[in-house]
Image 1: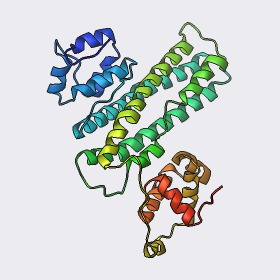
Image 2: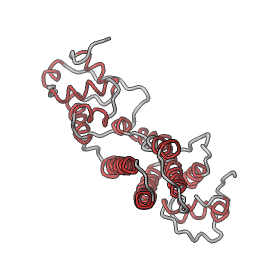
Image 3: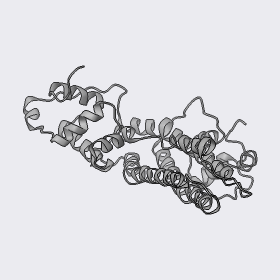
Length: 308
């Protein structure tokens, strides 16, 4: 189905009921009458091209081109993602937990503790990911859209290093249910219900990731005024003398330059991800270098790493 501004939203929903979630996440009331995409978007101050882009993603269609978006679109995308966070945790994740609890109560499954631990750990990881976005990333993006000063010296490059696709581990959980975990699937069909929830969540998170990676992050990078190829700042001898990275900052920098994510660095150093992020901010503040490419050159010049 080709989505256009002239289409009635009711017709889109009748063809694909999942589009109801798009309305909900954008804060549009479900009663849309006979209004077109253009009319609804005009009423709720939404770029119709952005709405059509989202609608295509919901219909498993990846648009070949990304339209030009502006600061208001950043705010709209952040609002969408914040609402989707609430939906994932309070509906999708909550339903998965209820089914796992029911499996534990109704079946004789030796591996139920493994399943329960896997689900609980995964949901906790999703919560931490969303907390980071809600408390750090999204406020920064809104500030950028409002042309406010970047007081914390944060950049979207830092988010890209922290940004792990939270849908990846769902494959392990689905595989556990499909291939290995033995329990009698009684008349309640709990295995099928749980798999159905997991596949639905996987699709939701895929859209979530596509919006962030292909639209929102590149848009914020444009607002930061960054070029595709960053140059490494020249550090004067006087300034070098004032740069003193702590041993822990050096440990963090080495691991980051080896390609580890913030979470992996935290695990290796037995510290929290938040602490790793704080160290990264301190490194950037002391060196005035934001890119990993620039930090690599800095580390080579200062004997922190060696060419292999």
